[in-house]
Length: 253
Image 1: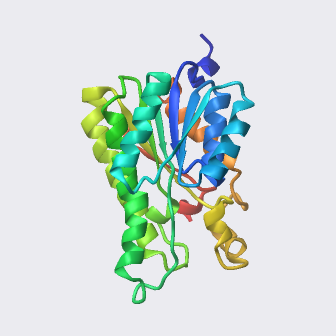
Image 2: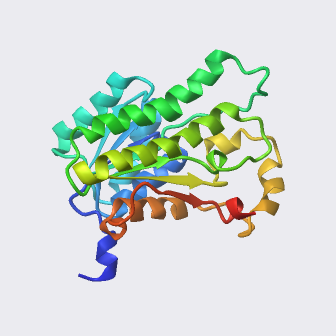
């Protein structure tokens, strides 16, 4: 076996949430290119089917399930359908997320809770459902954010709080499950990548923030997806409980 073989995901089954657009599409494609069959979950079924057709061009099998991760029952249904279709779940990419940019004194309880329900609670419900069926050697990858580690100028209390909580959730699930169940749990904290969320930022905001990024540019979604493939694969078999910042160096400035 060559060193590159450790990065292969042949005969694995991966679930990707938030798979109908943006970074979720990049994760789905990368996992399939590495050899995994993929189950895609998202709320928008019209976009989900389009993504599925694109991922099928890799030659891997793809199944879609309309899923709102804020609902624990829908999370369970996503995993149940993955098991019924493919017979196993080896990888979870907890990617579904939403954001707001509301000043703290004006953010309503409903606005705050809506972000927490998807970004934090939804990640936990998905991890719980997968943790019940995953076998030793499986991998959960939670998508946090550099805003869980630092600030970036916008009023994003709910989003930042949810993404910081993901880091704590990752550590705790790793210490519960890696030794007992053989499930590794890690997180990725993306920096500035083009996505539907960043498209909502004020004009010029990302460009102004580049002074904090030693690499001097936004990230390519494939760079982020490649890190997820590494964490999902045997190449990262001795990595658990970690949060990997993929941010062009933003968190060191």
